[in-house]
Image 1 (cartoon, rainbow, N blue to C red):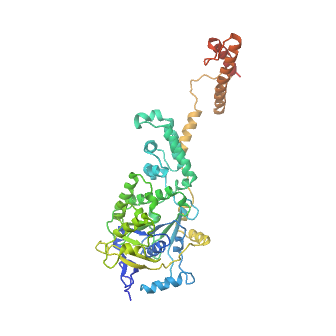
Image 2: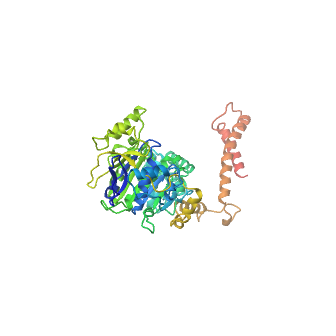
Image 3: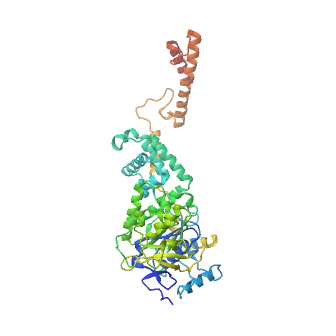
Amino acid sequence: MVEQQGQDGIFIGASADGQRQTLVMKRANRHGLIAGATGTGKTVTLQGIAEDFSRRGVPVFLADVKGDLSGIAMAGSPTAKTHDAFAARAREIGEDDWSYSDNPAIFWDLLGEQGHPIRTTVSEMGPLLLSQLLDLNEVQEGVLTVAFTLADKEGLLLLDLDDLGAMLAEIANRADELATTYGNVSKASVGAIQRALLQLRSQGGEHFFGEPALDIHDFMLVDDKGRGQISILAADKLMASPKLYSTFLLWMLSELFEALPEVGDPDQPKLVFFFDEAHLLFDAAPPSLLEKVEQVVRLIRSKGVGVYFITQNPIDVPDTVAGQLGNRVQHALRAFTPKDQKAVKAAAETFRANPGVDVATAITELKVGEALVSLLQPDGSPAPVERTLVKPPRSRVGPITPAERATLRQLSPLGAKYDTPLNRESAAEKLAAKAQAAAAQVPADAPAAPGRTAAAQPSMFDKMLQSAARSASSSIGRQVANEVGRQIFGTGRRSSSGGGLAGQLVRGVLGGLMRNL
């Protein structure tokens, strides 16, 4: 029989000969990778690791991209289809204390539908990440930075997309004034950014910006039993907007890095972050963003945060990031195409060699729920790779019902804090008030129009009508002047100047008549 799980780590599984694989808690903030083809058991592996972190008092954040991780909030059932297989697996690997149990969970949703809404302000996201989200080029990013800089200088809060739109209109109107300080502010670039904002709104992105903004420490709570809360982001609909999904997750990592103090290597992590569909963070990302990802992953370890990437193919993760992932669980890969074969070879080369395991061959032969595992040892070195049967989770495998989700949301300790939006005065309101005041202001020394008192000066609507009339009279006047000039003075051609001097005279008379209508 295999020895029982020690208190210094999380039991991942055991090999056929009883070799146990344990994730050392003191090394759990050294990040990790869970990889494998669709249907090989990645989600179940993730679920089992996450629930054991929670049992040890470590808060967990995970993105539920397929909608089936919500079951972690409920205990598994002996009547479930998976029960017999799970019970047999637990006995096979010597997990004698295995039993079903639930986990404390808080549900979140950027769209606010399946959980508490997650919001941040435009200012907190900053121009770099926002430029990535909007897919802006270098020139447009520079214009966006001008908008942020001017807003900060003039004390204008950028809280939501309305504020940003109003600020962009402001810098477009003041382009000449700003040119000497900030360089050229092209109205074409402003227009391109505004169109990108419209597209973001159509994808539901406007729900992400506003207040109350997320307090990142609310992802780091424990329940009254000392279990770490599991924050579950409903990301099934969000996956239709992959840039919003990946930008949000990178923003969250950045916020954690800035908010948490340095702790070095604590006895156990302060938070563990599971990033599913990891390739979305790196696909078509510009070098500046990749550099930021690498920096955050490298440095956030010292804040006590462990980051675990989940992906189908290990080569989805750039080498600069993959080199920092010390704990690895590799499920089966398929080697049907040259790209698949390259992935198998790359995955095999990342493990510490074990003479008893042919990694390249084993990767293609692994059964569902079986993986090649290499974890950091207490001294920080990677253990030799072992072919491992992964333990079964204790919670429900599969999604919870809408009724169960609604009940859990009502019981959440954070509903009163986040479910009701706030709308305080910010850039949009202040700039609108400024424009309204400017439009209503009449110079004190301006003479009143004939037949009108000062109190009867034209309204804004009157001014708009007068402007339209002047435009119409100018156009009509030119056409009439041309024709009358030709008929009366016998000009033999149409002139762009209204039939020469005669045309100009006629146009002047008619224009005056039109203005006095």
